[in-house]
Length: 324
Image 1 (tube, rainbow, N blue to C red):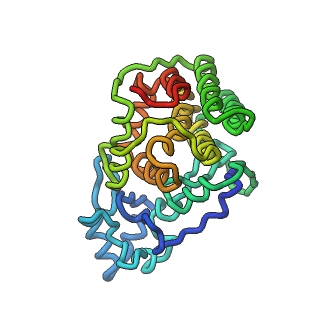
Image 2: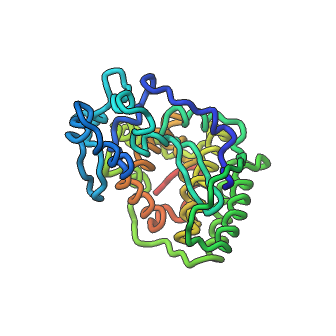
Image 3: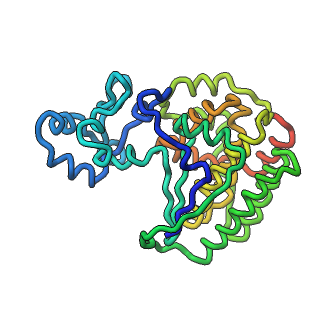
């Protein structure tokens, strides 16, 4: 199998108890089936403690029920994991073992990246000088799938072009993002019909997530700016590349390319609207990408909201301010 990662991927190292915004607070963690099977074999205090905090969420997933202050029940006073200490990292839930990594499999190719939702990873991505990729080959077999191979290779080549547009330093980032939208419009029309309608949620209300994980994000939205000013163009460029890498090829399943491109453009705008630093992007990612409720709503708004249409986003980039 080919494994593709950003070149900075191996720079990441979890800082555990020193983390300024632990991934063990604010959101529930799924207890996957393999982990649950192991937990059912445990006896003694740790077995009882695990059983006492298992619960079901609104999607019928088994989760660890959070404490009243929204901390994982195994996160101790030193911000370390009691479950990890008791049974070892290899027996913690899959989410805990892999975070902040995301993994997308496409047959014989696996793509692994780091998520902005981790503050350490966010700093790495924000400060990288060249968001590029490297490949390694391992002995793992391809993952079985029903992917349309022709569409996959078309999208893989298109993503290279999209990233090339974003990373071109011959024009301003504003112009590059506008070109990216034009590229997405043309590509979408070539692959599948796409109609932007069904929601008129005001632009900034899109970012008022129904599930609030960190109250600091609510303050960011309240005190937002309507100016489009890319103070740190390289960092905003990196954000756009991140979204293209993470989501673009997922269009092989739904043929919705333009929404993935709009997500990259809006992602690059986050620092302009809510705060020009890695911490702001981290907060946005944790609030949105790692909440099923918020992410499903966000995807719907990107796909159907006329205030997030490709044409509206182009007008926004041209005007330099959000006026709707």
